[in-house]
Image 1 (cartoon, helix red, strand yellow):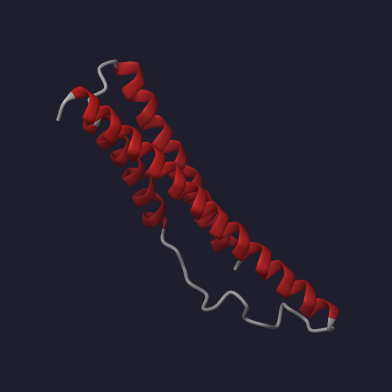
Image 2: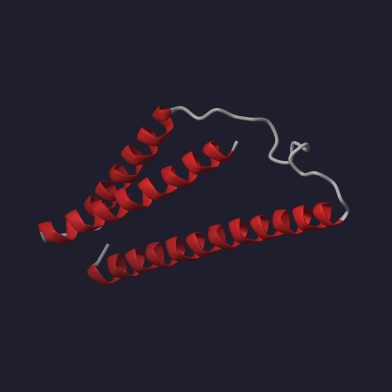
Length: 117
């Protein structure tokens, strides 16, 4: 690949990543909104939503899941820096820390979902 083709390839990957992230957020948002509306309509009808099993089966999450998510996020950051051949060490560390932070946030939301059950 020439430098122009390589730059275009990286740009396409970044744009696709942003699009996927936006679509995942929108899917999550609309599912949460639908559940909220469903709960409100059940409350208005006088049904006690605590008695219903609206969340499905109670799944127990292992602490290993959180650790796996964090390790995977860090590895993805390191993989991304090696794929796009970043020369400066500071930029490489920043990308790895970004992915590590994202994976910790995901693990937090998984744990908070476990605590609600």
